[in-house]
Image 1 (cartoon, rainbow, N blue to C red):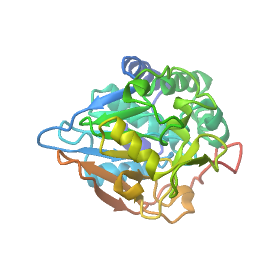
Image 2: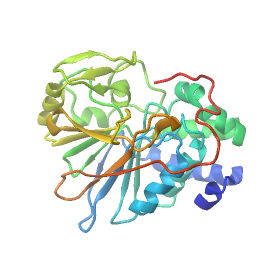
Image 3: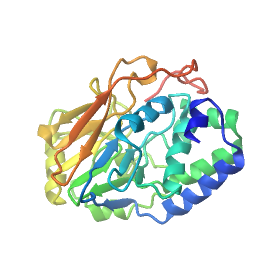
Length: 301
């Protein structure tokens, strides 16, 4: 299937629907927060936003290997939108999960109806398949967990932390995620928030979620007996950045984002020592289909 996609060929709609029905069943059985264990002789690979850059996803698998028992993956949301091969990206990730591969998928703020309507995924799926396939994708998106915890110590979520200092992992686990995100509250914060350099909290430049400082990260980690927050959601020039005194990492896996930013992509490895080790890479060539080719707006978050 990946080779068909590489050659710009689709798979039949009936196979897409089979993949979606199977992955929906698997996702619906998961909690909003999933506990993950690092294999004894391996590591976890954590990837950030891919944003429809299918050929860069293939490059990740080429340099890091495909998901396996000793090389399980977390993809930390925003599989779709912006890049114009979003269908290929998310179908590949869902097919891997449906086949039993060692892959965990968190929801991002773009795995939502309102974002995908504006930033390309809806138009792309309607163009390449139809509204029935689109509707089932959105049902699957609503089943995506909001976070995972690796080895009971590393908290991985797409956006960031909450507006409430009292939030526990059990609170995240109990979120009713099977819906479109609200404009405020814990679910919204996990998908949308960003770190800031100054202590405290402030309104987000995005107009949704919030910005949170190093003191907020420190209190959350201490309250929940954690050592690190890994999040994505924002482009970084080197593909990653250690922030908040090393207590928080941003990882972003879409190099030369939107064919315009010139950034590197990155992923990280976590072994039993839980010290993140980063790999960076440059964008690879892709067919001449511009980013946002199926989008209804040239602007976005």
